[in-house]
Amino acid sequence: MTTTSFRATKRVGSIEYAIRDVIEFAKRLERKGKEIIYLNIGDPVKYDFETPNHVKEALCEAVYAGANWYGPSEGLSELREAICNKERRVNNIDLSPESVVVTTGVSEAIFMTLAAIIARGDEILVPGPTYPPYTAYAKFFEGVPVAYKTIEEEGWKPDVEDMRARVSKRTKGVVIINPNNPCGALYDEKTVKEIIDLAAENDLLVLSDEIYDQIVFEEAFVSTAHVAEDYPIIGLNGFSKAYLVTGWRLGYFYFHDPEEKLEELKISTLKESRIRLCTNTPVQKAGVAALNGPQEHIKKMVEKLRKRRDYAWKRLNEIEGISCTRPNAAFYVFPKIHDVGQRWKTDLEFVVDVLEKTGVLFVHGSGFCNTYGVGHMRGVFLPPIEFMEKAFSRLERFMKVDSNSNL
Image (cartoon, rainbow, N blue to C red; front, side, top):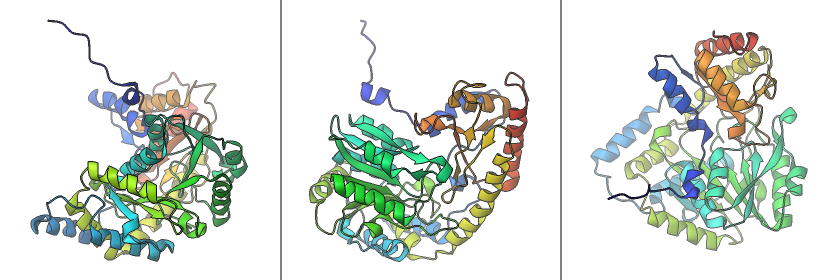
């Protein structure tokens, strides 16, 4: 008996996630014995950043105490309360626990909020470049992600006038990623206020991704909900970065909704939370300890990252054919590769060429936006300086030789 091949839907067949897609190129080389230096994924725990002991102990205690049952779909009440306290302490936002939904990482928060917002043909404005799931999930729900320009020469600051020009009758909302992935930009209060005003003029929902809110360097972070005052905001945040539990997958989103304009969306996302049952219960218990316990590790992490940022930024700008805007937050660099379009046809071709000849893995900039990310690459400055020096020295030698030469 024969049958035709079973086929996947176009919906899933078109999914792209550049940050992990490039790993396939690296794995092929590893199988042939090549050493790979991974600078593609923003995972501090892969390097010399350690999950705080009190958080690890809380996880173990929760498991041995029997907290291995299904939790409430919206999240444990004590965790939602701790999240409210953290947002009040760190970001000067007043929330109620009922406005918070706990998720399996920020990725699920993005999925759930966009599922509630986007219908076929709806548009949503996303920064260009942007974190890929915003684009991928908008398309997944048959919507249209529309990239607005951010200005590289001004530290990747959003171009609010360009954003204004891209608003149409189909536009449902605007995404702010602040601090920004992949560029490391930090938006000032004036810029955030201009975006909120634009949203209010056009009756747009604002989604504000703030997972790097505590990883900032020279200037202070200002939360969108704090600036918005009475305007409704959906905020997204998580534990992976500041609390160094990337593999635990714990995040949340909240509704800043003083005038109760988001009630229908809130009810809909709660329905979504029920159909996926709940977030990992012992991890949620540890999340309470993370938020309510000692916070000193964050300051130490930021100081270590500041030194590594300074090194990576300076070192990249010393390499012929590369220029890099200084990141002011998070742990990413997004340098421009000046010979893309000449020596290399695309930034993906450049990234693969670097990988094959040096063993250093970056992510192609067009994977974050096929308009404003083109001709760039994203790397992390999470590793120790001596580790980065090894990678950047290989990159420098690569840039000096003919692209057909092996190093």
